Length: 114
Image 1 (cartoon, rainbow, N blue to C red):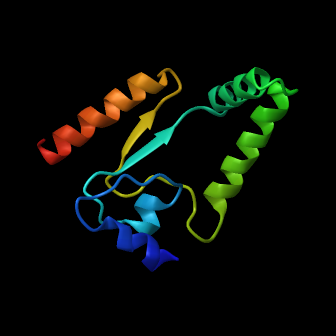
Image 2 (cartoon, rainbow, N blue to C red):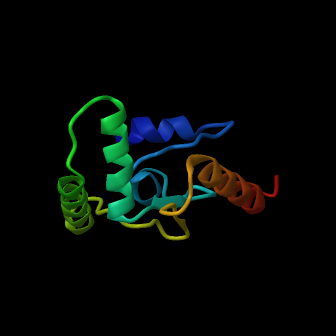
């Protein structure tokens, strides 16, 4: 699967999203971004999504689940969750989607000179 994913990096390039894209799949990427947000903010976002869909949700349980997942992912032996070397770490806790996109676009433009 790894080689199949890497085959997608041929011109004109690509944007890849995933927990190990910059550390395992594309460690030589020209621009690497590590998006993060607090567990509380990510749980709040998930809570709002579930409520908007008419589903029941418990904010405290979501926070606990996300924190547990983060710990599990950060401490696993294979491809642990961590920023790739040279990655720009962007905390989106206080950013909306449009602000996050604008930040990443500006970063890419600076790094690639476009």
